[in-house]
Length: 106
Image (cartoon, rainbow, N blue to C red; front, side):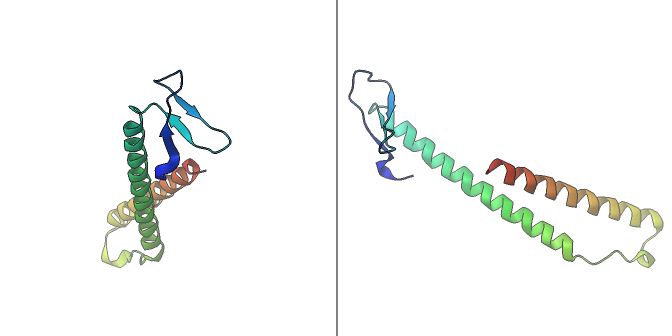
């Protein structure tokens, strides 16, 4: 968010914020400006973290997509079954998280 998003407001309501619909600026009481700037910084940090996590999930999905198939001759039946279940569960978790993230950003 730009530094020009908030401007000082010295009107009759000294503890309030006023939104100028024409310019898009928010005029706030001077004592609220540092709080709003801090919130803006925190929102940016959280958006960056969300994007980083989404990238990690997409990398994990790509890794699962190109993973080699389990060679059943190297494992007994129960081990193959457990690995297959774990693979399917991991894929489902990743897909659900990516879907939720894409729904939240709309």
